[in-house]
Length: 444
Image 1 (cartoon, rainbow, N blue to C red):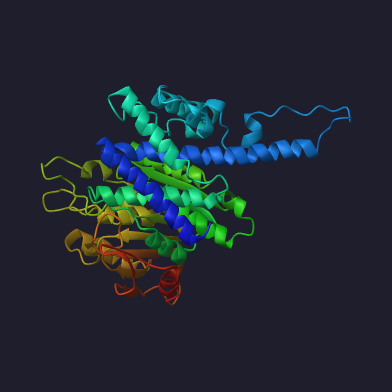
Image 2: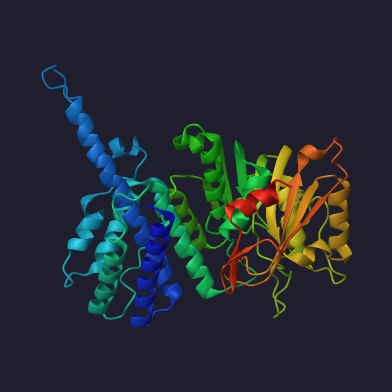
């Protein structure tokens, strides 16, 4: 499928989802997870059918008939050995498409998701199972779901494997664009993640994202490895993926995202400020992240968001806490930065997105920043222009840590790059970097 055809498919699928939202009165955040679940189901169905044909063909060509040996029966493990999810008949897309409108389609899809989870333990608790609640009238609920099933049935069965991941990521971006930024969280544009990955070069090792969201950092890291790995099917032999996230819906989305891209990883549901799920200090080769910006110690109602007493003495924050004169956490930006830095081993590298104000913040944050620079681990800071996020128009800064600098002539140097004038407009409110622009910046 050409890039142009893929773009047309993305837009056609999204337009149908938008039309459904308009006609049903549902909000996008009410249909986002069910839609992503159906994309996942279509992906699993296409891969299952391909491998099913392959298994039958292999059995026919290598038959033991006449040799006195009996072939082992085809089971769920036969499919797992081929690296695909096993789908019971009631979980097949064609089965769901064949159901009459008089059936309870929502219940049928719920049952399909439950069966997939039962047969594939890594997906336990991940797949959406609320397809009966899109509309309070059962008949209308079924009509909505039939429309969605038909919509995603437009995806051709011969589509390339990575094209499903592209569809999933496209929908993630469009949902983020429609819903806007909340709580300082911004959906990371693919081109920003690609640049982070191109600069830290995670060829091999353990990768941590303590604010992993929908798992985009992991996907782009895997894409980088595939581009440089002789056997593209062996990405998981090269990297190990570890994430932390405190929102259950994001964890489910991330795990589906990984599965669609043929990846696996460990994602812990924790509050990363308080919990170090993987005992990370000094353990990781790479850290990639886009944490929520400017999280205050207390919200506007004076409710505690980050309790200094709970993080005092945490070895991850070894450069100090950003405390105000009132004994409160002024801002979490430098907690995140220390989290990333402390996780790196002696050869470790980190690349992350940060709000611009972190570069010149004063008081306790200034002292922490000075310690980082004097330690010789801040490698580069890149200033990024407006409109690079799908759900916000603000500018940002990309920071890079490199533990390998110590003892070299680069130890006391920090590279500053102004990339604000490097961009390609997507529309009036959104920009991106082309692959050529990414290489241009990364090669400086």
